[in-house]
Length: 208
Image (cartoon, rainbow, N blue to C red; front, top):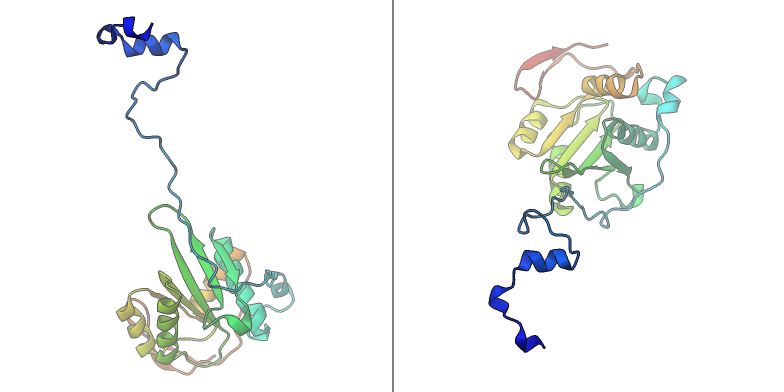
């Protein structure tokens, strides 16, 4: 029976309709798929999240927080900014205190964070340490957050590296106010020295 068919006269669209088949108006058009980014998080060891923000109601001085509480506070800042964030285990962090993931298409990336509750200046050695952690963890970006301030060489080293963001005490208090709605203070004395910010401009920091 099949041999009696004249295939040259067969109209595919008529056959498909006869078979009740569904066909796209444009058969060769690709199906749109939402772009997503996936990251390998198995190289990190995470701990359960702690609500460090609630402690600021009774202790608004960041220097009265424990190092662990401060690390969780930094994580909560990033979460409030709309990205995923985790705090790492202290004994296995390899120079990483938190991991921040932005999964937005094209501009997404994995960032590693170091959180330093310091009362003295953060020197260039810490920038080198973060740069090494970025390479070891194959991260796209590094963020160093401190309660104190950075030396001019630290700002310069971060600019030269190109994938390191520095957040000093002044910027940190702003981020907490902006994203967590908390007014905090940092109870340390800062010497009157010249510091260089991310824009390369110099300014004087007075003692408090």
